[in-house]
Each structure stands twice: as structure tokens, then as C-alpha cells.
Length: 321
Image (cartoon, rainbow, N blue to C red):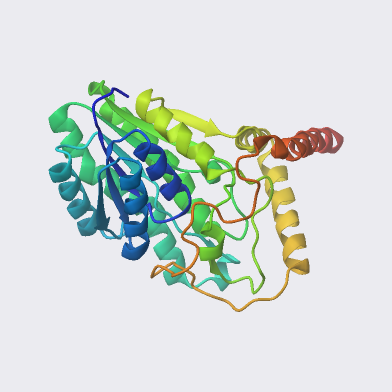
């Protein structure tokens, strides 16, 4: 990215990865437009960004409502002027067997995670085309390649995002300076799972390894500087992508077994809609407290376990022949 200030829009900026991404851009002094449903949390992020020397505008936005996103784009263009980078990041999660999860919850997951990104692209592309330049970054996650048993709506939205982004890249080939970049991080140490709708009746925890969201934030900043079509974030992300590509049925079976085994042992908890329909008042930090932020070497044992897991898949496949 050049030394001149850019106007950066970050959706889902009130917590977790979005907050980390906003702060990473703020360190460079760019104009930041922060979007999410939680206005109070956004104002807190804006204060941090301004303390780092970055002008920040808060725009309360529900990405599942295309009118709200159109308003966000207009506000960002006025604040800029223009829009240089748009980061689609806002997302929600619902966990539970598909038929045990209310359909309106699943619909909202898809409306936020898939249609929300489509709304963002639809709102910003006219500005990019008028400028003949711009960078759209989609934080998709490894969930775009690896289905999540017990998260059918989430998986549908993430797999759908891959198809949407691929189609969009094909459309935009005649605009060489408009870039669509997809990021696929592994599991992140964010408050996201604390916010999740939970219909399992059990306490949820992310499966290891969990990565520091600041790692994703630095990769997103790098994509804004040097755009590329896709970026796998974390070795585990690459490993799981390869595993599912090579042994889809076996990978699904093992993932389902691991999840069911965990749920049998987990403590009971009341079922909840989480933040699916309205923002919650807790868990608005960057980190969720699940991992070891700032200590990437601590993940080596999990990567080693992942390699063993992959070898086990290969062995099982060979034995079945």
C-alpha cells in the first residue's frame, strides 16, 4: 500500500478478527470506516484507532440488510473521499444438528455470512468501477473448504462464498486494478464461539489449534498491499484443505466423530440464539481466551498432530482398498 492514506471499510469490526483487522490498519494511519450492529463496541474500537493516529468513522450496520450496507458504502465514500479497500468480515455461527436448529436461525446465518458479503460487494463495486480500482477482501475461513458437522448453515454460507467469489473474479477480469481476495484462516482465538447460537445443550469450545486473530489481521493488511486471489492463513488451514480434497468422506466422518465425542463429555448449558438476531453485550475483545495469542510456536504440537491425522487418513484409505 502506498504512503498516502486509504479509506478502509471493515465489517464486523466490533470484536474478534474484525477488531484486530481494524487496529492493524489503524497502525498505518488510514481512514477507517468501522461497521457492525454493536454501536457501543464500535465506538470503543474507534477510540483505539484514533489513539493510533487513524481517523475513524462508526457506521452502525446490519450486513444482512442490503439497504444498511448501501448506506455504509455511501458514508464511507463521503468520509474517504472514495473507497480503496472493503473488508467483508462480519459473520455469525449456529451450532446444533440441522433439524434441531430453528430454520429462522439458519436463514439468518446464511443472510449474514453469505448475503452479507454479497451485499458488501454489490454496494462497493460501483465505486470501484467508477474509480477503476479497488480491493475487496473476503474473510471466508477454512470453513469454505472443510464442512462443519453440526454447523450446516455455516458450512452452506462458507461454501457458497467460494462460489460467489469465483464468479465475481470472472466478471471483473476486464478491470485489472479491481481485485477480489479471499482469506482462509484456520480456527481463531476470538469471542465468536461465545456469541454463537447453541442448540447442542452443551458448552462449546473451539477445536485446537486456535490462531491469534492478529495473524489474520496482518495477512489482510498484506493483501491490501499486494492483492492475490486467495490466501491460506495458518499451516493447519492448508492441511485441512488438503485432507478434505483427498479424502472427503473420511475427513467428514472423523470430524463428526470428534465433535460427537466432545459433546458427550461437555458440560450442559441452556440453548441460546446467541448474537444471531441482535448483538450481545459480552465478548467484544479481539481475543476469546481460547488459545495462546502471540505464541505461534505453541501450535507446533497441534500441527504435528495434524500430520499424524493426515497419515492416519491415508493409511485408513489404503486399508479399505
